[in-house]
Each structure stands twice: as structure tokens, then as C-alpha cells.
Image (tube, rainbow, N blue to C red; front, side):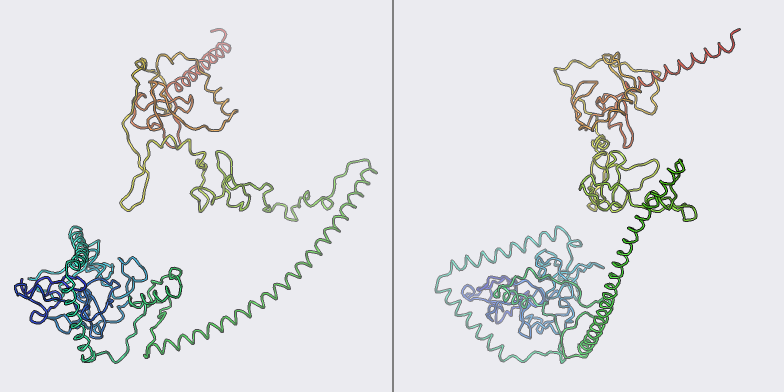
Length: 618
């Protein structure tokens, strides 16, 4: 509309609606249909006053500002969205009044969108309008993220301005608003640069002259303006809640050559304390600050007296400790002398006892009193039944760090019989693992062979909360046969055999008549000759002679041959091995069953012979 057009500042380049900025149509705005519209410049309030303002409610410097009644500056969007901020003239939206807002809101909450933690507690943060949401942020920070909303014009609401956090805002609406905000910022900068290039020097001089006139009027109005009302009682406010003060302090530190990165940022809530008292009160001529000051002095005196008392107790204990050290050293010297005298007397008694044995011609037993302390065994009267705990004679060393300290933290692997510190394991353990009669513990190196069989079947699943857990994968059997390989040999099933809980499989005719070492002999050889475990590299299937890897091959624990999951009988989709159990192929299982049958036949023949010997008549 002609009465609510978008106008642009001829100095800084910001663009606003006349109604949104509170422009008076009679004095400040020029209709677009007027003939002088193309030549009459317009300036925002900050350019008219000739200042580079800093908002009192947020740390961001860019934006559209309005002046307060005390001569400070705030963003107009901050004044609209922060509760408690009022306008002197609702039509012109000026001046802005901050005295009606509670000063305890300054620096009370931390902004969740500020990148610099030093500015996160500056100004006033608003909360998300979603019920029970505890997200806080500055108004301009929410504007950058596209989180501000406004009720429709036909809705009659007392406070039509809303703000939501990223979790409760509409994703598409937020994305659209953020895109518009970034486009508007870049447009303002580009349009101002292009306008400066297109303006002639005469037009630029006319704009500057007009700007100087506005600044003179603003200075005159400021001097003749009545003094703003302030409350009688001074309202203390933390210095760190002012963004302009923090920038000045940072500039001062830069000029003095002091790095501000070494000072930690304290974001703790200063209004709460562990003992119920406030940690700090802002200096002011109030009864609360005076009570806090006297209470702090009394607490300091009490702490100093307590420190002096504790120091006296410490000195007394140190003197007693020195006396006890002297007595302990004397007792150690006297004990050493008595031990030497006891050793001399024992050696003399042993010599006399040996002389008596030679005189009598018999071998006499040495009495207990003449035995060495290590060989002496206390009698029942002296408490011989009680077992005293002694330190181990052998100090075990850790298999990783090769050190023998912290013997009580060493853990024994039941497979390789090596000891490991709990902290040296990967990942480190905080306590001893629980061992029972039917379970044991082994280190990660010994567990690699057992776990490699299950690697193909296990995968990592990511849960919705970000954590990961193991998940079993079921894959189709993969069978690869090269073109130059002969067709598969005919498989003959073996019947009437006992599997003893193992998987049944088929064997080809070529390998059926191979002679194998008996199972008992193989077991005895494996027990006598233990070799280090080699790497489990599976490359070829013993049935189809096809290549493969750990994902589609399983190895027999007896003959160490590999088979495809699909080459087994019946074909399988996953490895038949399970954690903690072994698996042997059909060929190895048939050999063991044959041995069992032969043993049963021998037992039957021996029973028949024994029966014939007992009954010869029959």
C-alpha cells in the first residue's frame, strides 16, 4: 500500500515497512506517487543520531535499532519479543522503556545458539513458547535461525509474537525464514554498494548535507528532551550481561597484550548455592547487600580461626610423628641386635646337639627351638593350626606392560596362562571378571580364533539414541565356481550314522576312500605338540574347490578343511559354528562313529568268549 511501503535507509541500506518501523507518514515518509520521491532521502534513527548502536538485550550488532528513553539502543525485534519492554508512543514505536522489565532477567539464562560463550549470557534470553520446554535464546539469534513467528492480523491476541526452538518449530517454515533472512542481508549490502556507485558526487553531497541536518535536529531534541524516569532504588546488574561492556573489555585486553582465551568462562547460575545462601550480590546501597557484606566478613573470620586451629593440630601431629619415628628406629636397632644374638645362640646349640649325637652314636632330631625360623613349625599350643597369609614367592609380570607391580590387579588367562593388569587390557576393566565352575576367562588374543568364525554373522546396528549393538546378519549362500573348473563330484549321503549333536554333511567320492589317522591318535598328538595359533585364512572350499573368505566359509575343527555354507547337507545360510562350541564335518564325524562301532563289536566278541569259557558244556 502507499501508506505502508518498503523504504530503505540512504546511509546504512536497511529496508523496513513504514508500519513496522513506526514511520510518521506526514513528516518522515514520502508517497511513491509524489514527484519529489526520487530525490528526498530517508534515514533510520541510528543514522540520524550518528551512532553505531549496540543492543542492550542481545549481543548482535547488525539489525534495525530504536532508542530507549535513557539514551540506550535496542533492536526493534528484541523490544517486540522480550516480555516487559514497553513503547512510549505505540504508533511511532519510540521511545523504548526498559525500566518496567525485571532486572534479574539480565544474564539469567544462557543462549543455546550463541557461538561465543562469552556472549551467551549477555542481554535477555526468551524461552520457547512450547509448554514445559527449557530452551532459551536471544531474539536476534532465533531470527537468524528462522524461529520467530507472528499471529495473523485477524486474530485478536494480546501478545501476537511467538518463538519456538528447533525441536518445536516447523522444519519447512524455519528453513524458508532462514533463507529469506540470509538473502535480505546480502541484498542490503549489495544494493548499498551499487547505489553508491550509481550516485553522482552532487547527489551524494546532497544526501550527506541532509543527513547532517537530521543529526543536528536529533542532537537538539536530545538536549531538550525531559529526563527519563528511573526507579528510586538502584537496580544492580552484572557487568558481564552487557555485550558492549564485554567488547570494550576485550578491546582493552587486546591493547594491553592480554590473551582472553586463557580465562575460563563461568556459566554457573550465580543465584543458587549449595548451602542455600547466594554466592554473590551485586554492590548497591541496599539492605540485602549490607547484610551480605557483614555475613561474608563473619564467615571469613570463622574460616581464618578454623585454619589457625587446624594448623596447630597439624604441628602437634608432626611432633608426635617425629617422636614415634625415633622410637621406631631404636626398636628396629634393638630387634636387629636380638636377632643376631639369637642366631649365635642357635648355632652354638646346634653344635652342642651335633656333638651329643656323635657321642651317643645315634642321629638325634633337632628340637624345635634350635631350628631356623623358616623351618620352624609352630605346635598346636602355639597356634599351629592357624594359617598365616604370606606374600607369594613368585611375582607374576603383566603380559602387556611387562611389570610386576599391583599383583592384586593381575588377571590370569585360562587359555594361555598369562597374567594381565586390569588397566592394561583393551578395553580396560574396572573389576575382576566373574569365573564359575563351567565358565572361564580368556584374553583377546586367545579369543580371536573363536570370534573369527562369528565375524561373518555379526554386524553393528545403530539404535535411535546413537548407541551401537551387535546384530546377526543372515546372508544367502555365496557359491563361486570358475569356468575352467570341472563339474562338481557326485555326493553320496552317509546313512545310519550318529552325529552326536554335530551338523551332518556329505563327502565326495574322491575323498571317501582316503585313509585318516584315528581320532584318539590325533587328539594325543594335538595335546603333546601344541603349536601357536596361525591366522585363520580361508580361501578354498574342500567340496567344490571354489574360493571364498570368512563370510561364506566354515572350517572344521578336526581336519581344518573349509566348506561353503551352501555346500553342506542340508545347505545353510549362515555359519553352523556358535560361540563356545566346536563343529566338525561329516567326514570326521563318520570316522569317529566307525571307531565307536568297532569298539562295540570288540566288546561283544569278548563277552561271548567269556561266556563260552564259563559254560564249556554248552
